[in-house]
Image 1 (cartoon, rainbow, N blue to C red):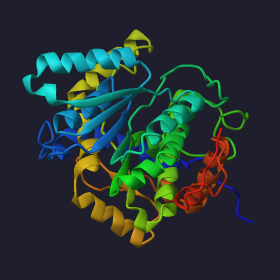
Image 2 (tube, one colour; image 1 turned 180 degrees about the vertical axis):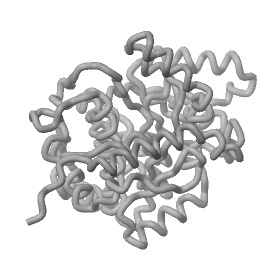
Image 3 (cartoon, rainbow, N blue to C red; image 1 turned 45 degrees about the vertical axis):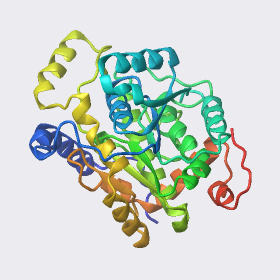
Length: 357
């Protein structure tokens, strides 16, 4: 009997780190043909929800979508900060007075907050054209923490919260079809491994580290997204994509020892700024032809959803992401953890009411 796989093999682990290192060092060369900022087509009032829209990549995504004519919904924890940002845009950009922006509270560390957000938006009965699940955390070097829902924080913010939000907003996405769910992922998923029996890091066999928690949550996101694309009916016109923004300069190392912070800053030459890091998500959210590519993958029953690299071209995620058996288990376990039945997506497209949490 074949022994169940419980972790990445050494060869896979080394291959993941090798790819991560090479793509980080050469990402500017690989993306040299991209314009900065990325030119966007007129969005003509298309509704785009962006989570984590007050800092980093999310802030750039939100700003550029709004300036291109989208109706932007900033889904954020700190609504006061969001309003301050909007006022800054209005002051600094003469043409920004025509911006169409709403601000709604969303805290991914609370599944109740996710449900409340989705209920508030769905109650408007408006179409949703793009959902960008950008918000995420990487608590480098920090001890294990759990949300009030009982889940490890990386798992909840990077995977469970966005998964729940995506499913709950499917009725609005259907009204906006052709529409898309864009998940901002990370190349660190290449060194991740999902143990669907212990996604929460509570057994001794699965020792916690912030790096493992982050990498695993990002791999889980790809696996779940691939299953979501599979279970959404073709005629619904909803497409699911994951994007890799590249290595982007952020403040994630603020809690590290000073010497490690210095080493991290030495890598800045090779890294993108937030505007450059936003390009793959903006491409996935606005490019017309990418939907044909997504449709082709679904028609061929491809095991993974569309995965867009930081050079704004389709690329392959890790080998582990192609594990259909594990992806199915991640799908089922995720639905269980957020309180859905296994047929929740089918029920939504049959027009039935679903309950969770």
